[in-house]
Length: 277
Image 1 (tube, rainbow, N blue to C red):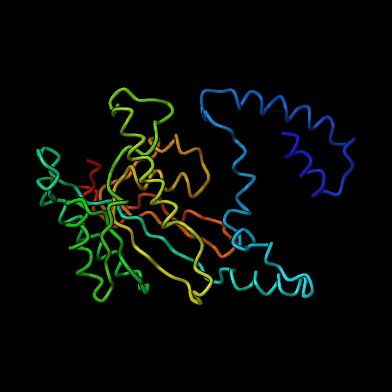
Image 2: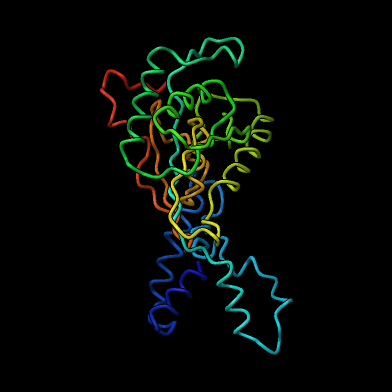
């Protein structure tokens, strides 16, 4: 709280005195918020977003040349700075047979195949130059990718286990209808967090033009990634809902700012084709 008020004080060019009353009120409000049932962790992460993976953190300052000083540092910083914007399209797989005893038996339903066709048509209609499709290795995601890929000829595709469905983190508030074993959070959570860190970041410094990438995976994975990317408490992921074949659009600017352009969009599907199973 003190850090926030000091930052406000500094940015406004004011002395501490005039903000004393504001500070005391802020302490009261934040104390009530911080000790509420949600979120359960510290609520200071939003202060860090402007510096998240910023170029200076990629430089070993101990190697700085004392003689050239700031000029060399500026040159090295420029070398690591992102210049382009990344557009991330997160697609949830289409409807599938949930009663399959084995994962390989949980294939798309006839309606699910129709949904994938509609999603593929929608992506193609955007007229964007997609650079790649990264998809979960689970059967329902692979089959969804097969259908969508037909509408995006020439776009390379990569399969990964990182994007497989799982339990990312224990939801808050808890729910009674979904209670995986505690060990699943540790196993799946680490993997899904690794997927977030591996795929959700600024553009590479060598990238000159904006990019458009598609990730086809699962509801839990997408919801967790959205919360993490926006720096919302990740425990709230289960409060979001995604339809089958839906499109979620994240934008990552060169300065590290992230915007959510669309969440679970299925407006391109007829109402009778929309499902969430």
